[in-house]
Structure formats: structure tokens, C-alpha cells
Image 1 (cartoon, rainbow, N blue to C red):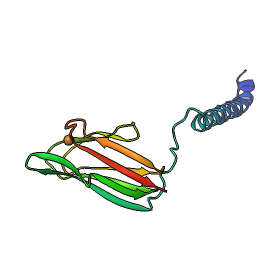
Image 2 (cartoon, protein in one colour):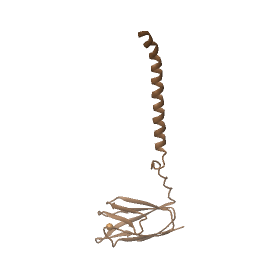
Image 3 (cartoon, rainbow, N blue to C red):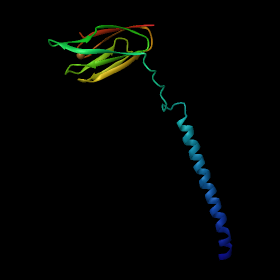
Image 4 (cartoon, rainbow, N blue to C red):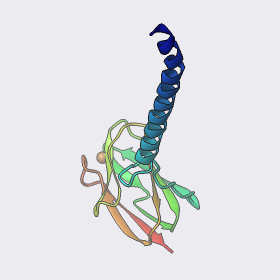
Length: 138
Ligand SMILES: [Cu+2]
């Protein structure tokens, strides 16, 4: 019996090794399939490099807030950077839902790259008299 077992052990070890290898390969395949799956948000489309960067400042004059400039004309592919130069939190909210930042705190910036021509009116949700327009030309 002892002899029989000692002859069998290497075979069992070999089988065990082969089995673990097989399950490892299976796990790897499953992991790979998972990462390349249709529903996977792993690789977002890279954002294009802006052709230009233009600032819109949020300013305060005598307790009245405003976007400066109120109307901005840019070329397609331009990135607009809103800079909050007030001590108050604002929003930059597109009238048509194209872009939005809910809480732009003091000294913070919000960037948006305009890739389609059009007229984009926007406002601040906290001070609705604050309005602005971005005009994007091709
Ligand atoms: Cu505001």
C-alpha cells in the first residue's frame, strides 16, 4: 500500500498542478473578458486638445455679480475657463443642459471645450440675474 501510494503521489501532484494552472487561465480569461466587456466604462474617450483657451471671470461690483465678458465669441475647439473671482459660490448652468457646474467655490475654475458651433446662453442658479452667452463659430 505504502509503495502504491508513493508511486501515485507524483501523479496526483502533477494533476493538481495542471488543475490549478487551468483554473488560473480560466480566471485570467474571465478577467480579460470582463475588462473588454460592452458595459465597461474603463476607457473614456480622450478629450481633444483645445485650439485656444479663453477665460470668463465671475466678478463682483458693488454687491452685484456678473460674468465678464457677458458675451464671448470663440472658435470651435476653444476651451472656456470660468474663474470665480468672488468670495461667493456660483453655478455655471447652460440654459440647454450642454454644460453645468453646480458649486463653483471662490477661486475655483470650471472648464468646458466647445466642439460644436452655436449660441450657448447660461446663467448662475444662485443669482439668476447673472447671465452670459458663449457664441461658437466654425
Ligand atoms: Cu452666482
